[in-house]
Image 1 (spheres, rainbow, N blue to C red):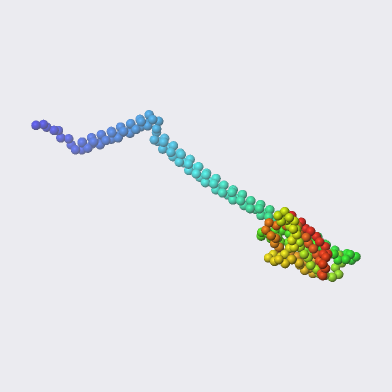
Image 2: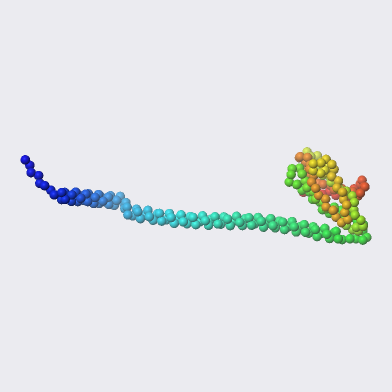
Length: 232
């Protein structure tokens, strides 16, 4: 028969807690030793990680700032380009308007000039032909002027002939109104000046080189004068 020594329960519990604490301390000590041997310090690692996060946040803020500045600069460049284009258009419009004013001044000077010794003289003062924007269609503008002694109105007609090039051949075509086969004879009846304008069409593949203008007095079969205007 053996005799076992009775141990009070709280002493047993205290022993177990002490053993656990010693084991935990031993484990922590071994972790520190392993970190030191491998060059790894978790406190330094956490600090480095914090520093990296701060640097990343700073870089992100700077990047956002630069992106905003780039957007503003790009918009300014776009505005400047648009402004320059508008200025160029305005300058071109002013140049065209200046040229028209000069032409008008010359026109009215010729219109107001009179020579009591010279008879009246009808002439083609201005003629312009350009593409209308549609295929094989042209728009023309002409201005007839009577200078000198203007005793009475000039009455007559004008005919336009197109000198064209078709498949290498030179062909003269009487200009007809668009959509019509009738020769375009326009009546003239004016004392000072008369404007004549309209549109005409040619066959596909036809190149218009120049336009011949023939002015007839009323009832005359032979032209009073003929003038050819090249198309640039």
